[in-house]
Image (cartoon, rainbow, N blue to C red; front, top):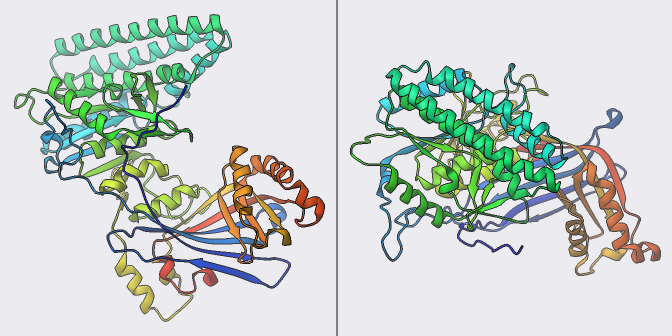
Length: 559
């Protein structure tokens, strides 16, 4: 099938500011090459990572590569109409979601909505916020795992598809278990709701009926898969998305049964339009999505009767331009939250999770790691890229492009301050860095380096030789072959003489990368123009991240 390219998403542009340093453990030489460019204050948004690749086997810790990287992202501003659906012909009104309306978005992960007790807590938080007059949209994941139900709903749906593909009738038991789980939760929520009993009973009956219809349809579809013995990604996306659908329906019904009769539910498959890309991600069609959202509002909201209505949105799922159901892929629920925030021109989005915020290091590895109060978008991006459990880098894009602050909060510890992620930089902290006389002051560097993150189980691939010096296209051949092999390059270091190129890949890809390069450059290796391709396994990339690192003299030396 030929995919159509979507050019409607604002294009992110940037010029890297890079410092690559290769330190040899055998020779007392250091090679440094730098590149820089000027940016206007409006264009500049620098997130800087200082990456080290450290040998971790047998207790040896020799520095192999140091890289400092900064990316400046220029984001296209919203038009004067925001994400409105203005076009020729009759269009739905978009004023209800203008920035002046002050919408906020909350996104709850599967752990936060795993079971009726946690859904009640979410509802209490929502009702308190709505009573204050705030306009709120809540994006929900499918139910996560608990001690009583150790398997996530999404994983059970995936298992049902896999069982059907393997022609195993166990998919029937998988779906039956899911039906029982959601009916049990519905009885506990709707049967004990504080509103009128008749309302809860009617909602319970309606929810149970729709759930049974969905389960019956899924059984019929999976039965067909058992006959064929083959499933498609599109079919898998359709099945897996039901976890979010059921949870959003149940939560909306609970809000109505608890007295919020104007609560509205948005099935993201009716609004959000995306197209898959070659990198197993999706590109959002914001124009069509915003038009669909305005049409949904026109059909489902009758103001002023509905007043301040909360919106419950299914996370993770969407539709393609041809109408087929799809998902937002890995970390899709967080991504759907920031997309919805962009569509609503929200003043902020809060990601509710099970930690106190973004930590200065992995608390499982560093006992005195502490939650950070503030990060810039690019600092969060860098920490995430280098393995920190923050947000998937792609999830931050909609918020970055439209200047929407992201707040990370602990659902299980409401007193924790959390972490604010926005475009502001800690200029005053850097001023204290410049004024400090002690070059090795821990407090001084604390203001510059926000946090540390690691990517474990990496391998360094090194290719060098005199045949590479001054030969155009050598780097292109190296990374073109690596790309064709389907291998992701994590980090690159090249000597200024072009005598060698070193890059990091996942440990599981090391042998494949080595063999691909040997085949590509076999003639040069046989003639002696290139040395044999070498691999250093069992490495970890350690990244020190801070947006002011590029201005801090002595950063590499201090590390």
